[in-house]
Image (cartoon, rainbow, N blue to C red):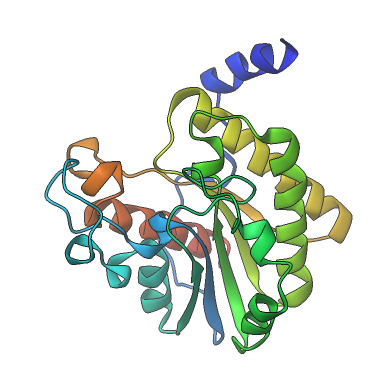
Length: 237
């Protein structure tokens, strides 16, 4: 009951955090890679689709147009994609719950892959869409997100780290997700003296924001990339 009362307040006033409008300016010089940790949104699934009804098939998918890759391109650096369709941090989409991101991050092979990425100076984490879709895994999600963000902080101490949400959830699901991610960010920042940024992404103009199966369209990815780049500019004043 208390959680629902608090949620009502969240729905009325979602945290602004890094979402403030920022002045244009130079981007930071980040000679290392961009590491993108996420799900089908980060992979650009459905981005090329003409509408919401098309299937999530290869011809409608474009990793190149995805927000994280656009950010890497704008910075003039390479990227590493650590993302899978349907994956959640603690709860995947559908019935298969054997390969959540938390599980993958306990496996030697996946950790070795992170070690092999080379210098990383920007980390974009966007997980939780599948966790919170018609679901409330907050009690498990928050400590798992704390563990993930702490792992990124320890492995890439010189990197700028973003914990992202959006843009596919709405209403209660979106509010719960955003509150859980921001809670984890605040905890890790305090415990590790870190400066992880929380940024709630949106798809921009709703009339052109959707590709296949409600996934963000190319214009939505353009908008999300610009939100991240604007925040990087604001931190480079």
